[in-house]
Structure formats: structure tokens, C-alpha cells
Length: 172
Image 1: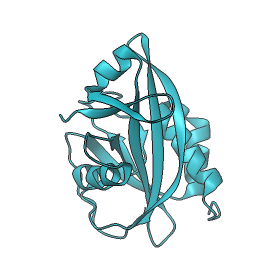
Image 2: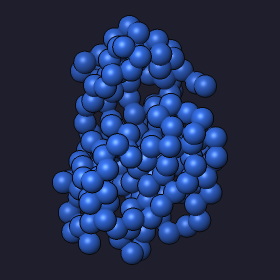
Image 3: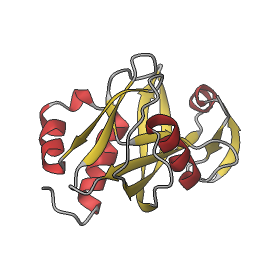
Image 4: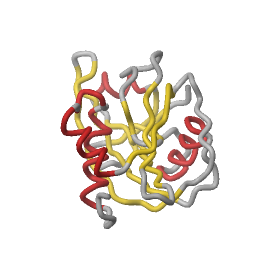
């Protein structure tokens, strides 16, 4: 596991280390989140594997911490390749958000940069990180998020809601 970038409350780098160190010392982290959309307008979701933190919860297409030496966009591309085998996808930044969530009796602070891209290729999951993927229409996703929010990570709920509000495509 590579060291991740620690940032202050203004999202400016202040150091690096492990995710646990950042949480323990009150630093924020940077996270890149990607939603991929196919030619049918469906969004790709991934379900986390059973062996990682927040097991078997659903996330966007790809998500991960920004490592030392990479930009948020580079982290997004790396996570797509590692988690779902997607390469060469042109990404556009949708926006950013800030999140504080409980972790081991402390608060994990994080700045999230959200990206979107079009992808019609073959998904090849890394089973150490992802247990399954699913293409879903945004309208169906909205119903699912409302009726069973416990199926999703906190970050995914926040980010997916942001995507739905920000993107100009109708929820079909």
C-alpha cells in the first residue's frame, strides 16, 4: 500500500503516510470517485469485496485515495484500471465535496473529487477489491438509494447524490 496525501482543512498538502495515521492525527485525505456511463445511459456501480473495509457495500464505478505523487485525476485513472480493468477512459471533473465520517472512534476527513466518463468496454474486476459490478439506470438507482441506503458506503451515497444533482442528463 502506497502512502496517501494528507491535506489540511483548505485541501492543501501537509504530509503523507497511511490512512490510519491521517485519521489518528486529524488530517484530511483526498479521494477520487468515478462514475462511468454506458451508451444506454446506465451507470456502473461496484460492490466492495468481503475482505476490505466496508465489505459488500456498493460504491460508484471506481473509488480510491490519492497516493503521494499523483493528482486526483491520476488516482481516478489508476483506480479504474485496478478495480474494474477500465483504461483510456476520458474523464471530466464533475465537482468536489467534503465528508467527515466516523472511523474507529475517530473522524475520517476527506475531500472527494468526482469524475465522469463514458465506457462501453469489458469490465474485469479485481476480486480482492470488488465482488461484483452492476449497470443501473439512474432512476432505478435513485429508488434503491432511497429504499436501502444501508446497501451503500456513506461516501457513495453522498457522491451519487451529487452526481445526480450536478449532471445535466435526465434520470431515465
